[in-house]
Length: 211
Image 1 (cartoon, rainbow, N blue to C red):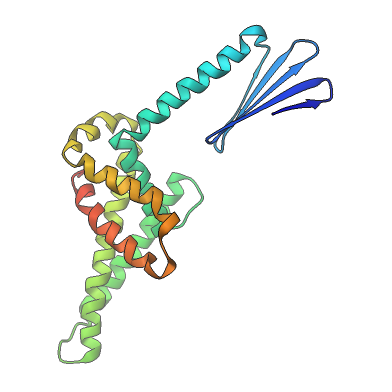
Image 2 (image 1 turned 180 degrees about the vertical axis):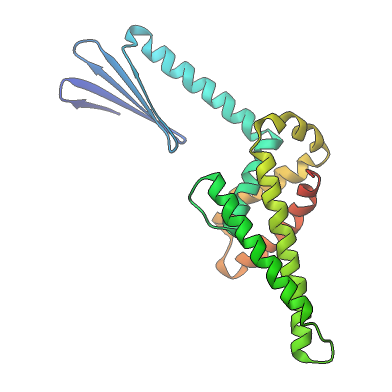
């Protein structure tokens, strides 16, 4: 698409998550704007080589993106981040997410301790406390494992080691990764909670390998 903007000609190229805006003025100054959800990069005065550099950068970006998709470390990091943010909704920084997760882990721990002390198999209420304890301690263990995994998967230096350690379960990780990408298009609300419970049941043994 081409559009005149004042004394400039603007070319817009939209590909996947990247928007390229190329502005060519009458003074032969070339402005290239590359917009993505996470970054804005502005490149000026490229002259005749501007278009080449733009598409070279784009090709390099695509290759890097393809490598990351096939990388077990990246797939697992995406999975864990998505599940953790679902358990502890947060739009803030990683440090704040970890802080909020720790608070919820402590809540589970204290609730489990309370229910454990109230277990009495001779009363209905005591049986309730037994079931509540088992459910709460399971949530506690799962959330703690998610947080520990989130922390280690945000250490770039661990990438090669984790890729090596996870090579025997890389097919399971890829399957979960694809499920995570596609589920929002097919999952009906009535089955949502059951799906995520089943998803976590398959994920937890994999994350245990990171310890």
